[in-house]
Amino acid sequence: MLDTKKVDVRDGVSLIALGDTLLVLWKSPASLDRWAFQVNRMETMCVSRAQGIVCLGLIMEGSDPPNAALRQQMQADLTRMGVRVRRLIVVPLGNSLWLSLVRTMARGVLLLSGHSQQQRVCADVRQGLHQVRAAAGPETPSIAELLRGVEAISLALGFKASLAA
Image 1 (cartoon, helix red, strand yellow):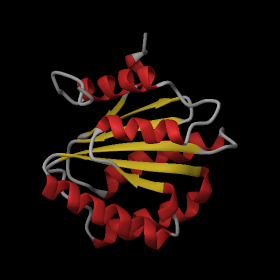
Image 2 (cartoon, rainbow, N blue to C red):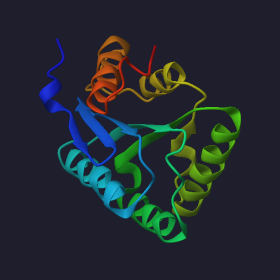
Image 3 (spheres, rainbow, N blue to C red):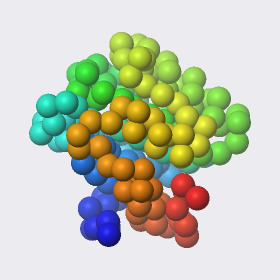
Image 4 (cartoon, helix red, strand yellow):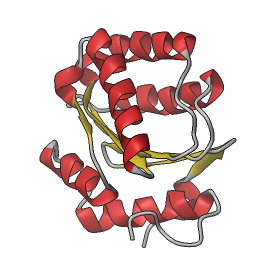
């Protein structure tokens, strides 16, 4: 059973760390405060994991993409963390236009940070979870554990069911 007390929620973003994997759900628009919330957890995890971490970000349609200043901060943060983030997976949840927009923004941020080979943009949650497993290390949770994590962060932000369904 997953301990839902491990879910952290702040102003439209929920996250949970499971082993070496951070699951993040963005329901609200991108902002410096929300990004700092995610980066703080990523950096904390990186300190205790010599093989680095995997981060899966689920982004709801209508979350509004980051502005230029925030994109620049994201690039700086990802550059600073470097290979300690061994895989960053983004899953836009919405229509194909949203998928295209998020894919373009994510690739731009990661290309300029020098880490485009470590990123993936997936069309749905299941693909994202399989990308987590493709980058698995000894501490990476199973697909079943990851699904429970997605359910926990979904429920924490007020969704009636897991976004992985």
